[in-house]
Length: 407
Image (cartoon, rainbow, N blue to C red; front, side):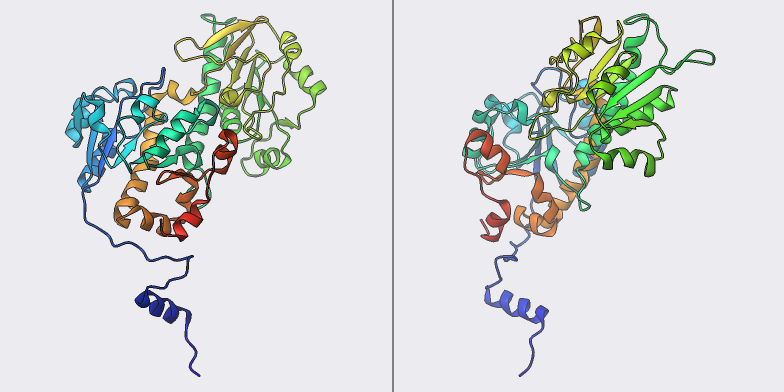
């Protein structure tokens, strides 16, 4: 009996239209002009934009039609003229933008914006679970959208590229912001890092992830004395072995941390959330023992914060004084440097959109680039994120099962 090879099996199956569920028939590619809508962000202090004029120019040259709301790039210092010359159509009508095949935003669409969305739209935005409302979810589901969350999108290596870039920015920015608040204009007139003959600034970093790593690198480059705390031995070991940062590090012990905080000039909170909430490792009593005009930068505030004294602030009113300590608790810290952050979004989004165009359909895209499925939290109106479903008591279904059913 002649043995049938695996490749022959798929060829025979494809001709008969009986591919197994793990590999359903791909939809035929269609030559079509994809339209992209980029609204101006309506959330307070959100200054970023997902595409730069350079990204628009590249996409327009590949057949995309791009509509941008008037002044959408103003806060990132990209003018309407730059976008227009790159090939975008500028419109003052927000509702017009939501007729596009794809919507690119930074923040999740508001309930008002969801009303403009047409059925079946593809949306890229942040999810920001701590500030997510059930009405937004159900509104998007009713519009049968497919929604990607930047923070969950993976690349072929399993890395979260958007989170990686924003974390790099947040780590560097945290140190530079702290340096600003140490000066005579806002603090006691301390130069970050010190100089010859003057003791270096003491910087304590809570968290050895990407934010903590880039904060440590930046503080070291400025000459500061850096101490890093984390309960993950693997992350602490990585600082020394992989990144060659021979700095003081320790697991988090309350007594030791209290002692270190008493002499710290800057404390940066960058712990990773656990079950949706950042561990609160610094009590109010510990903050009360810190030096007067010391600076706390709580990068983890969008997931509750590392300090008991942390309260959410905004870019327009970023700090407050509590127990003599300066607190900076802005959730979207990368929005403080919107042009850099916008370029980071652009550099990741443009290749993804070109990949999508080459695939010709959403189904083909998910089968050709299976790792992109991790970024989807709604697929054609069906909730696919189990954590969100549990949080809001909504039914969710695994996207792999939906794709296998060729829905």
